[in-house]
Amino acid sequence: MNERDSVIREFADAAGWGAAQVAPIVGDASFRRYFRLIEPSRHAILMDAPPPEEDPRPFIDVAKYLTGQGLRAPEILAADADAGLVLLEDFGDVRMRETVDASDAETERAVYTRAIETLAQLHACPAARVPLYDRAVYQREAGLLTEWYCAARGLDVDVAGYAQAWDKVLDTMDAAAPQVTVLRDYHAENIMLLEDGGQGLLDFQDALVGDPAYDLVSLLQDARRDVAPALEAEMIAHYRALANPAYDFDTAYHVLGAQRNAKIIGIFVRLWKRDSKPRYPLMIPRVWDALERDLKHSALAPVAQWFDANIPAELRDPAGTLGGEFAL
Image 1 (spheres, rainbow, N blue to C red):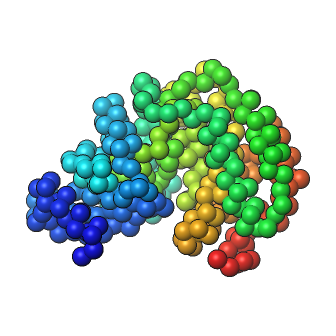
Image 2 (image 1 turned 30 degrees about the vertical axis):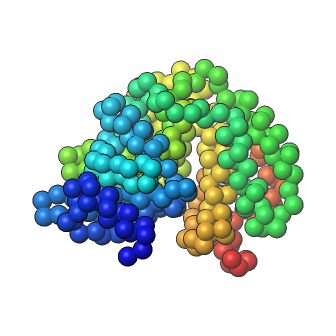
């Protein structure tokens, strides 16, 4: 048993779970690890968010905010934030991703409908006390594409012009947009389907206050699974019917779609090149496809022109060629 495992065991003992069986759970793209603590009559999830790479405090704060608004985030059973350890309610193993992948179209539509309704409910709540999703954050995230993808492709691109194009596009965002809690990673692998029919939320520690369209993009232009354009359109219409957004929601959806997809392409290359996680490049073609669709919106013209001038179409990974063209 290494030093970190000893710290985890001491935490479990102090929380009253010292006799539990400990089973590892497949983690995510971060430094966090997860374990299921199993006893005959109860079970819980232990999050190991080791400092200094991770800080569980934002997760704890947002979880308490969400549950306070009547949404289903895991209950915090125990926490030692300084040690990076949190004991959570166990939502089980039934994720939205696997459920909809194995289901028929009717079930898929019903599950997505419920996820849209959860967003509408969240957006009707007072925003959480978290930082703003401001211009600097949008630019920093969009810049991950030039920093990682373009570098990996060996492309010498106009980085300053890229930022300038994004400034022009972000200027088209409607200032009348409401400011809501944006979970930022709201997709089928972070939504649990609960026994009572509810949907449990995960991976929201990076929440910011921003435009309502962002989490719809996360869900409906999912980097990890295909969402049919017809279902995407139907769910956007359902959200409109529920939330009645009184601003230029269509422009916001495509601008934030392009911004998020550019960011994800950069992040996925970074996870591959820097963190040696080879599964992520396999998802990049799907993200490029969504990005190309967003770039067709008239508000994205400056960014679309930059792409045309700097990244040839054959290098936009349309067939998943990225992973085969150069080694780690």
